[in-house]
Length: 109
Figure (spheres, rainbow, N blue to C red):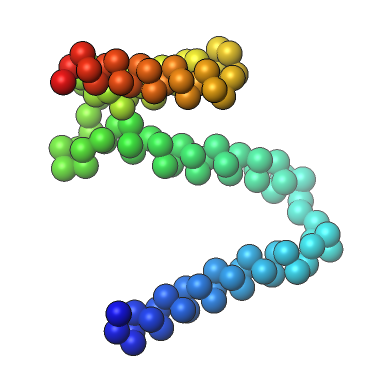
């Protein structure tokens, strides 16, 4: 790594630490508006969706959007969504989604 890269990484680390430390240091003295508090409840779901959706719909980024029936990532993800919505059990969702994924991959590859 050259000097520029080290400076950039150090700067990004300091900015990230500063932003996070400011909220921890303020602690209970900061009160959010109830609307903001309610909106913050949706952040984990939004972040997880932003991570998982591209992997499901575009498993091979060079090919672009892949919504065909031979896309095991899409089928496994849809199965996991159905299982999670129906039974709300984390282990069942993971096991069912992975089982569907591997079964579909075995059938179509």
